[in-house]
Image 1 (cartoon, rainbow, N blue to C red):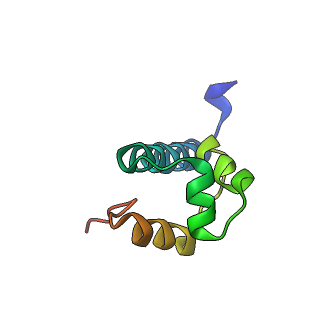
Image 2 (image 1 turned 90 degrees about the vertical axis):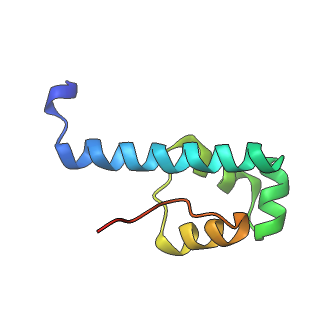
Length: 79
């Protein structure tokens, strides 16, 4: 079955999981819980749970919000 998954879907999953992993790393490094992050960003804790699950489709606005909050980029774009 995995061989039938399109390369685009595989890439999307890899990027989403990578963002979730990076978010978890930043939260751990800063000692911030899901509830604390939710409060700080004006979000519900269940939304943070979705972000960390790897099943959330991050918007650029959310990535910018998180990067600003943590003072570190969640993603790096190279040319």
